[in-house]
Length: 207
Image (cartoon, rainbow, N blue to C red; front, top):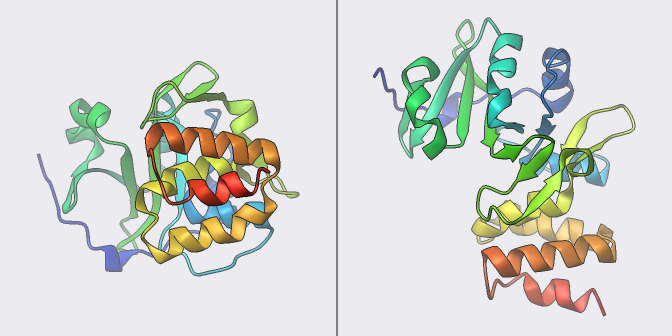
């Protein structure tokens, strides 16, 4: 196992439109995740992004690999450990992040989240009882960029809401969430993070 310690200072991420161009032939349902998904929902870039995250069903990872033949894929197996994909195939079920490196430039370009799924249905990796059809989960910008529904993105961000960027994303998105989206997010956070600080804001907006 040729593990390395990934250097986060070596990130030079693609923008979502660059990633979409490179992944144009991927049939698996994939979408922009993380902070970029929030910005795509809100209609424009609001802040700097230190990386670019996309999500894909675990079964669709190889399609992403095939679409990027000139890049290296590393499975993030620990806080300071990255293992080449071919050496970490037996550890994929215990992890979810795969970093993509451009050897020629020596930089990281993309973070691929591998997610559980059941056919055309997304399954939340933190609470398998939370599911959603991909056709509902994936929304698109006016020019076709796929991104995850903001309430789903915020559910994942809730785990680290103490980070300013995640709180800022929540504050910026909340006024734009329709009642149905608020209810979904409130119910999901209650399941995954009972007593979370965001619940009061979500309850207040639903009355």
